[in-house]
Length: 181
Picture 1 (cartoon, rainbow, N blue to C red):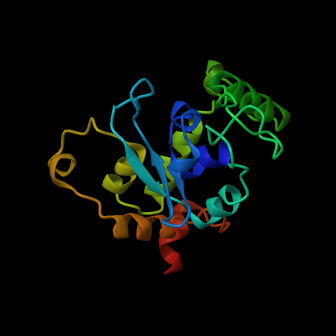
Picture 2 (picture 1 turned 30 degrees about the horizontal axis):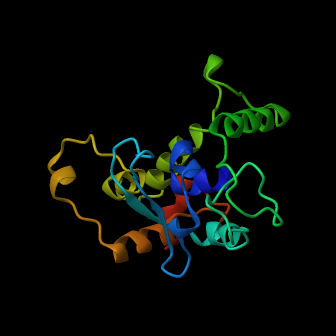
C-alpha cells in the first residue's frame, strides 16, 4: 500500500476507498473516484497512470470477490465484503517501519508520516522535470489560481508519456533524471 501511495501521490483516504473497478491495468490507470459519501478532498475524480514498477505490485493483488482494493486482511483466501484498510493503522504501521529503519517518524520533530509519501511523489516527479501542471493533475490539486489551472488540459496520452519518464526504480536521483535521454 505504501508503494501505491508513493507511486501515485494519492491521499491515504483515497487509497482506502479504492475498489477493484478503480484499477484498470489494461488501460494503465488508477481511478480516484469521488463518490457520494466517500468524496475526495476536492470532490473531483481523477486518474493517475500506473508506473511500470507499480504495475508489477498491482498485478499480484488478490481482488476477486472484494469490495475494496485494499483491506486490513490482504490474504488471498479472504473474500467477500471485508472492511477497507484502516488509515490510522496504515499510518501506525508506516511509523513503526520508519522507527525500525532508524528514520525520523511522526509529525513531532519533523519526522515522516504516511502523508509524506504524497510529498515525495510530487517532489520526485517535479525534480524529474515532469511539468508541475501534470503533477498537479495527478495529485488532484485544484487550488492553483494561475491561468494554467483554468486552461491547461492534460491528455491521456501525455499523462501516460510523462509517467513513463519518472525514474522510479532506476537508481537515479530525480535531479539527474533529465540527463538519461
